[in-house]
Structures are given as C-alpha cells and as structure tokens.
Image (cartoon, rainbow, N blue to C red; front, top):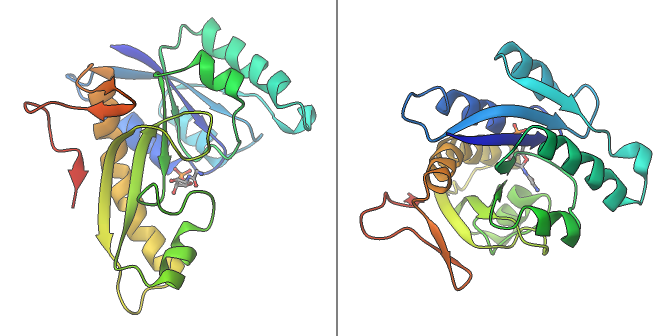
Length: 210
Ligand code: GAR
C-alpha cells in the first residue's frame, strides 16, 4: 500500500472521504499523515479522531517566502516516507520547486470541470455564466494553478433556481466520490501519464462520473 499524506487548510471533508475509502482492505493506499498549513484547521481533529497522525506546518510565519515554507513541508513528508500527496482544500499556491519534488506523485481536487473555472468562487462563476453542467476534477499537480493532467471528473446538472451554496453541496458530493476513486487509480498504477495526459486503458474503470 502506498503511503499517502493529505494536505489541508480547512474542514477536511475530502480528507475524510479519502480516510474512509482507505479503510477498505483492497485499497492500494494508506493515509499515514495529515498536514495543515493553518493551525487549528477543523480537519486536524477529524484526522486525529480517525487515528491518523497529524502535523501543522504554518505558512503564515513565512510570509512571502513560499519556498522556505515548502522546504519545511517537504522535510516532514520525506521524514514520513510519503509516496503520494493529496491536496484536499489546501489553499496555498505551490512553487515550481515543490511541484517538481512531487512530480507525478501529487493530486489535487478542484470544484469545477477543468479547464473551466480555475481559481476561486467556481460555483458563483458557473451560475453567472448560466452553464447547465458543472462538477469537480481530480488532476495531477503542475506548476500552473488548477492545471495538469486530469485523472477523473464528475458532473452535476445545474438547476435554474440554484444558489452557489446549493450547487456547492451537490458538487462536494461528487468530490467525495471521485477523489477516493482517483487515488485508487493512481496508487494502484492503473493510470499512467502519456504525453501529458492520463491514460487509464480499456480495462480500467470509468474516469467520468455523470
Ligand atoms: C473543496 O470543495 C475543494 O474542492 C476546494 O475546497 C473545498 C475544500 O473542502 N478546493 C479548492 O478550491 C482548491 N483551490 P474540504 O476541506 O471539506 O475538502
């Protein structure tokens, strides 16, 4: 089983979904560490309750020196023999240096159907555009924000009377389904990077949840 660390900044509901999934005997990854860059983030207590080791590496004291923060983060990951990193509501931009250390070994979940709606306030922007389909994406992390080869996506229908909050709830439900499946795929070696794209092969599971 591959050793996985989850990086969070907040409540950690995607983290919890990954922890739950990894309890299955045949799951190819184990969650061995949860790190928050925010002291007291809600997800830390949830991880501890689930019996998972936690660490806080605060980003704030480092100010604009992102790489100094990341060197500390990287040291903690290496000290725990981490093989795969999952960003789950981790609200820090990562430098090319850090991304390079974890190239092909770091996943992120984003609350939109990339490449649409990179960045923040995805649900508000989707509603403002009047799109009829919205969703979530798990992708490998590359230096450009919310880019990188897509591992899995899930979609929801947008309702005429949707609010950003209502839409967020339905998208979050999708996130909790695709992130565990995407990590399973990556940890088992079931998906591979080919010319900058994720290829899962004919025998693999569906990587689109509709
Ligand atoms: C999730 O919706 C996740 O997709 C989003 O933050 C939320 C975290 O919730 N991530 C981003 O916006 C990354 N730019 P969670 O802490 O309950 O998993």
